[in-house]
Amino acid sequence: MIISPSVAALKELFYPRSIAVIGATNTQGKLGYNVFKNIVSHDYTGKLYPVNPKADYVQGVKAYKDINDIQDDIDEAVIIVPAAQTPGVIRQCCEKGVKFIVNEAAGFSEIGAEGKAIEMEIRQILDKYRCRMLGPNCSGLINTHHNLVESLGVVGSLEKGNIGLITQAGVYASGMLWGFRQIMKFGIIVTVGNKMDINETDILEYVGNDDNIGLICMYLEDIKAGRRFIDVAREVTRTKPVIALKGGRTDIGKKTAASHTASLAGNAEVYKAAFKQSGIINAQDYRDMFNLCKAFHKQPLPKGPGIMIITYTGAMGVTSTDTAYENGLRLAELSEDSLSKLRTIIPPFVTAKNPTDLSFDQTPEQVAEIVNTCALDKDVSSFIVVLQAEITEKYVERFNNLQLNGKPLLISIPGRNFVAPVGIKLEQLGYPVYDAPETAVKVLSKMYWFYNRMSLQ
Image (cartoon, rainbow, N blue to C red; front, side):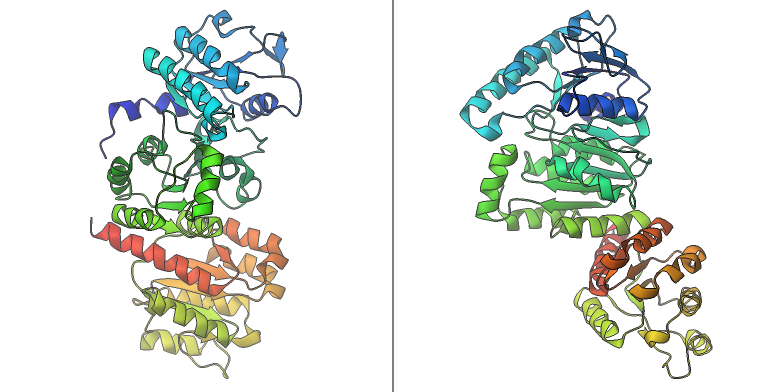
């Protein structure tokens, strides 16, 4: 994919060699404390300059009264000051030669006319000095491959990962991390806020070309430049899956979005059609987005429609089958060789077929043997395995070395909320876990849709 020069230049936004934090403070509970603590505690290796007119040191780092007191060049300035003060601060940054500004302040166009007037003043300054800005009203960015965490909320340790998350809402950038970091590894997370300058399409184009990122999730309340977004997304989805959740789909939701990030949310059907046209996988809600995300993150794509279902209850085999056929998948037709081997594994009262219903006699050893055997079957392209919640712990060790022959396996644990720690262990082995097997089947269907789309490129 050919990247435009202006977007290629965003590398210094995501991989800055020096950062000034204007509004950094020693006062716990303030956002300026949180942002600076995140940068320091995640071992950012570049040069770091806290700017605070009332402190000599901020969290142990030498502070500066004013950005002009800093002798070195600054790649990036993070701003956490009241909205009314931001034009003056931004002007100072521009005069200093700062290349990128991350404006994490709130109180702009999302609150009405007064905030819009401040944005207009900032826009004139940015245009005059040709400086780029992320925000305002954003929660900063995270790049685990650069040990960079600028989030407004305090974030614990993060492992390097290949997921890119682009969002207008800060909760998706930091609030979700507390739980999701246990089962998913993120690379780049960025919030765009009110998108005065840098927007979601710029970020998508850049992240789509970052070799550290293999999967992209997006939460959008509006899109600034629809035609360009579709063109960029179409190119990115040639090689990387993009999963998007559109907020503001109802009239009331649109009004809420406008007061949240000053967005003008468009017609839901228009967005749905645009996503399909550009190869984006449309998520129904935040749970669906992350259900899809963890499957694309952890498992290979299915290369065919044939699905193998292993369960301990016949009812869930039936409903999973219905869901498969309703969503473009089908039951795999097991070969005679597979059926013959299956009969040596299952109890005598169980019929050798797909779905395989092992009843409550199901054991980890049985399931593992069936998977290892049927993974060699040509018509089996993916697996759904339904486990008993009360004995889930027994599956963890046995599932550590399944021989899947490059085929995806998704797990359903009805009542998994009651065995969450064990579910996390299975997730950490690389197997996405869902409450309902029907959910897992729907996820597989979208994975297969994306595989087919890639195959046609």
